[in-house]
Amino acid sequence: MSFKVNGRTVEVDADPDAPLLYVLRNDLDFKGSRFGCGTGHCGACTVLIDGHAVQSCTTPLWSVSSAPNPEILTIEGLIADPIGALVREAFLDEQAAQCGYCINGIIVSVTALLKRIPNPSQAEILEALSRHLCRCGSHVRILRAVDSAIRMLTP
Ligand code: FES
Ligand code: FES
Image: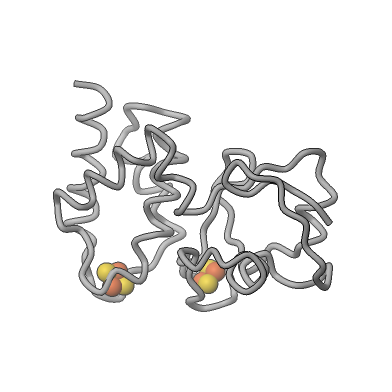
């Protein structure tokens, strides 16, 4: 099966029912997408597929590779994306992470949101974050980082 990850076409020989997360981490060595719950509840595994934030632990490989020209962006690929880089900078500036386990997935979702809506409402921000859990309770700092990214994007 072949598809694009972080701008590069990759070939994988894996079980079509395998979760995309396992393929990204174990076959392609993109370890930035994290395994949290494995059941679609925590958001730690979030990646972008064609610009949409998707939980890769509940996305089977076949559903990706059967789409026409699918393009996957993981947290590693976001470094090369101008909005992704800006979001990452805002999270660093605000020291939004405590243990950091949830943060990669959150940065991916916030990037997807700001690509779609550069100046989102509070309700739109909360909606985008609603599929993410942070057990360290860093929510206030995470929201501050999102506000800071929006200010950087729309001065
Ligand atoms: S590991 Fe995918 S949502 Fe928790
Ligand atoms: S910073 Fe630890 S889970 Fe969110």
